[in-house]
Each structure stands twice: as C-alpha cells, then as structure tokens.
Image (cartoon, rainbow, N blue to C red; front, side, top):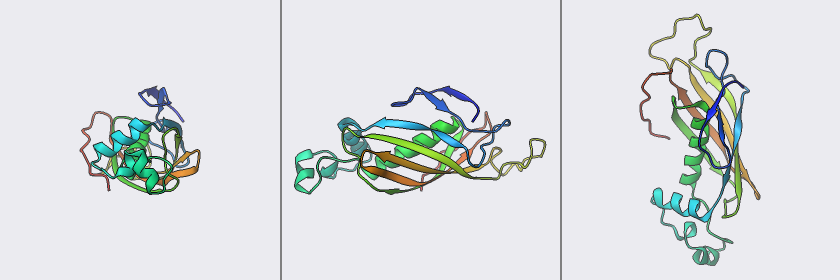
Length: 178
C-alpha cells in the first residue's frame, strides 16, 4: 500500500489510501483495519438517525424481554459504518455505488467492531498510465471491496462494497447506496 493521510476515526488515527503509483487500487490490496467501539450512544444515535424506532435498539429492558441480552446495533448503522470504512480508505474522491451486506452476530454495547477489507476487482481504469481514458468512465476506475466486520461474538457483518474513484479535482455526484 502507498499513501496515507490524517483522518478522524474511532480507534484509528490515520486513514490509509490504497493505490498503485498512478493512483489506481490493485486487486489484492488490503485496507487498513478500522476499530469502532460500540457504545450505547452509537447504537441509539444510529437508530434514531435512520428513523428506526424499534425498542431493541434503544430500550435495554424491552430488548431483554424480547430475548436479547441488551440493545443492539441496527443494520442501517452498520451499513453506514461499512460505507464510511471504504470511503475513508480511498479518500475524498470516492463515491459509493453499492453496499451489499449481510449481518451475523449482533453488536452490543461494549463490543469492539473491527472492519477489514480487501480489493477484489477493479473495473474501468485505463490499462496503462499512458492510455487515453474514456471520458464517460471514472478515470481511476470502479473498485469492489470485500468487507468483514467482527466483534467479540464473531462475524457481525460481511459483504461487498462498490466504489467509484473520481479523478482528483473532479466533482463527485451524490449517489444513492443500494
């Protein structure tokens, strides 16, 4: 891996950007892990921000009545954290195209979720630094990353994230995450 910059993150002080000498990622590149302390505040704030008012995400007593040992993180919060993990690693020009995840073991307060990722495909990037890119394509390509998030109980989340890498200085359009 080459390149790194400062970034804000829970449990990580640096954002590592993955790329080759001309700014394109390489299949097999591993993204620097991100450690996220799972707190009651994170769980409740994520649920409220995503308008998920199910009691299992904010009321410990009702969660226990329903068979859970405590409140637990909702899928939308996990989805957002997975997207953040990938875009933080590729820098400010990264635009999410798709996030497809599957949940496993719940994230409870007090857990530490560790997100890891590996580049599994790169599409649309020029074949060589000297080739002329197609103006209709993202100049640095579309990248697919396999992501896994684990906690003390095992695998919390797994999935694949597709991210478009815009050329430095190009305007990134807001894109809905599927």
